Length: 149
Image (cartoon, rainbow, N blue to C red; front, side):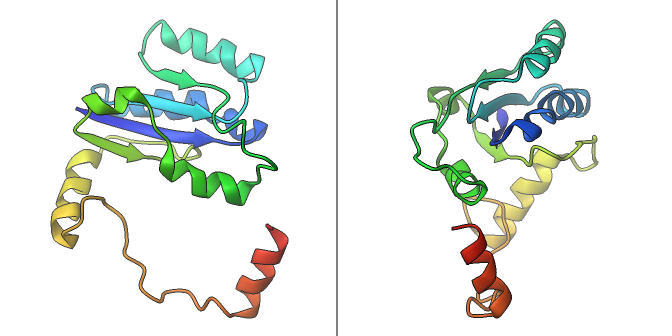
C-alpha cells in the first residue's frame, strides 16, 4: 500500500489541501493520504474537506509541531522530513508530496516511477542525490540564510 503525505505550514497553503486531495484521489484512488497541518484548519478549508470526505477517504492531523518555538518556513521545510504517524506502519511506501502541485494520472504511475528510481540510485528513497550542487559560500546563499534565520 502507498501513502502520500504532506506538511502544511501557514494559512495560505491550507487552501491547497482540498485540491491536492481531489487531484490525487481522481488520479490514484487507491493511494492513501495523510496531511499534517501546523495549526488548526481554516473553517473554510475544513468545510471543503468535510464535503470531500463524503466521497474520498483521507486523514488530516492538525497542530503538528505546534510546540516548535518560532516556527518559520525554513524550519517547516526541514521538519516535514521527520513527520510520523502510527498509521505509517501499515504502508509499504510513503511519498512526501508538495502541497501546491496538482496530480494527474501518469503512465507509468507515480508510484512505479519512484520505485524504479529507488532501484536505479540504489537507495531506500526516491530523490536526487545532490553532491556539491550548491556553493554554500555564494553571496546569494548567505543572504538567503540571513533572511530566513
